Image 1: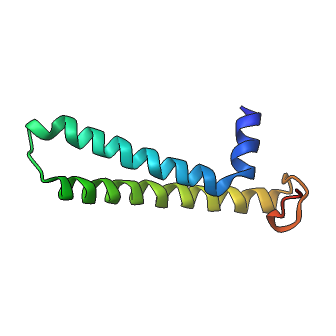
Image 2 (image 1 turned 90 degrees about the horizontal axis):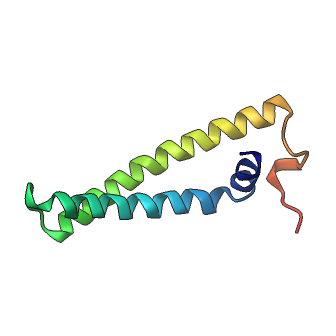
Length: 87
């Protein structure tokens, strides 16, 4: 679990982008699967998928901001200054 947490901490934007893309795909798949019950145009399905993905992304960004604030104030950070990654 700590390895995953470290990777996510080091690759924040990649993680958020992956969550956004998976939310788009999941929402499109769900809307396609339930399409027999509620027929929607493909354009409306895409709009709904974007709205769901944006809501999830905002929640994840809020969580990431709270985690960053907690990590910075608790002193349990990796010792790097202002999230500078040594490469």
